[in-house]
Amino acid sequence: MSQKENVLVEDQLDCEGFLSDSEFWNSNVAETLAKKNNIGEFKLSDEHWKVINFVREYYEKYARGPEIVKVAKFTGLNSKEICTLFPCGFVKGAYRLAGLPRPPGCI
Image (tube, rainbow, N blue to C red; front, side, top):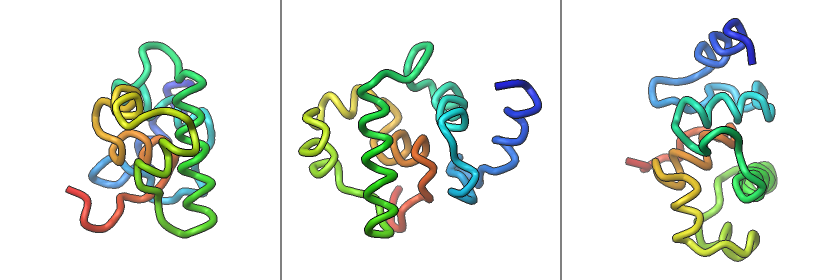
């Protein structure tokens, strides 16, 4: 992404780093947010994308993000592996990168 595109992404974030409008999301935005949140060393892995895509699909179907247990069951990754992929936390990592809003009650 270019510097101009990075600025556009920054303009779309709320004060906690979540996208204000999930319609703005695309894979380039996810990669930019990953770099901003120090997720994935240079590029998101296939495992990152499994989690991100499942979180997005679940949100589109149920209008809320999935619990980590459901993500683990669907992806075949265990909770520890998911937390390793998203060291800033499952919600702050996976939900942000998937373009979801911050869930209510999330600290």
